[in-house]
Amino acid sequence: MQLFLSYVRQEQEAVEAFAERLRRSGFEVFLDSGLTGGQRWWNELMRQIQQCDAFLPILTKGYMFSRPCKLEVAYAGAVEKPILPVQIAEISPRLLSPIIGDIQ
Image 1: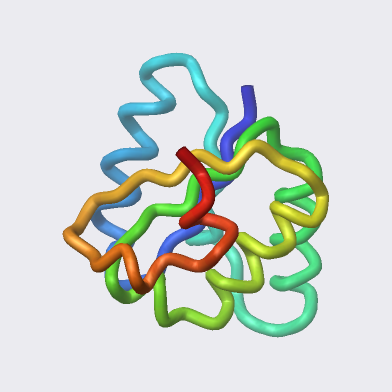
Image 2: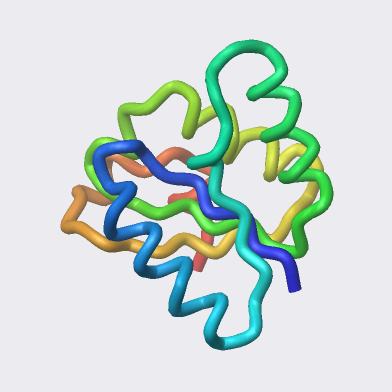
């Protein structure tokens, strides 16, 4: 199963540790840490979202204010990927986007 982890750079260390635990459990994990900016980067992210089996937004306060993260989760919803939010920091429910906030 291929998982796409969507996160803000400030949480990269924690997300990489989480990704490693997922890999040890047998999951394939995509992180954008190996990509550089620009249109090719964005196209690759969209391709990876299209190919993933599940989209995992890694929720932090920074995630809620990140425009790229909002675009990623909106795209995952548009292409009907299962969205499995993972909260790693305390955040106000008021900050959740409708896509994430509506998920049980």
